[in-house]
Length: 251
Ligand SMILES: *[C@@H]1O[C@H](CO)[C@@H](O)[C@H](O)[C@H]1NC(C)=O
Image (cartoon, rainbow, N blue to C red):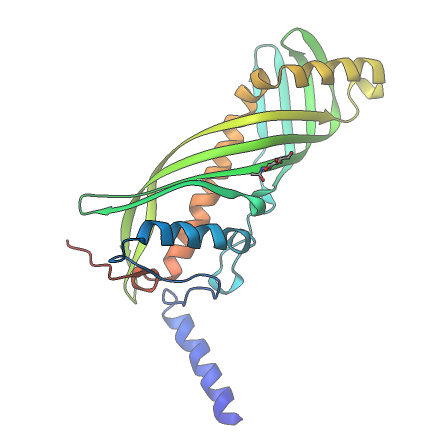
């Protein structure tokens, strides 16, 4: 028993000392680069792992991304001042992989993935001005629901040397997004004047695309940053050799 404890302690220390050499979580498996189905293997591993991965891996210091605390969002222009504070994004743990490509060409290693999810944003809002033609004024709770938000992230795959071997790192990510539809619910508009509020909300929902042209970019930017940061945290803890069998870097 004491030996077991001592061993557990030793293993614990060992892991702290070489903090970049963890095993894959049990729901993930290594893919073989020499196999014909390598792409498919990685894709399936990602699909299978997403629901777990997005909830965090405490052992690796990988934080949950559902919910995500967002920085304040401020829209100020075209006659509208709209601010969201205490914003949180919900739903990333249910995201699905809609496209995936990994490439290990010598001079061009890339990692592209497209993710789709139904997302909702909760926040305190403060609005004053006009949305398009209708006045809007108020502050209170906001709930914004977006259906099928698809984000395509294209990254270069760089390498970082750790104590235990090489690690992947996503760098220079480019991204684009599309949203199928959006529904706004802003409580306490016009000091609770329901008639005015309903008219404005209805109008906002009919013109969601114009509103989202302003609102979505700062949110999507934070989503991409969070996802890339989370994947890189994971990569920094697990060597390439533990993820990819038969991987040889030529340079
Ligand atoms: C989003 O919700 C709709 C139902 O409103 C569903 O059909 C769709 O599959 C969901 N999308 C995702 C990515 O889960």
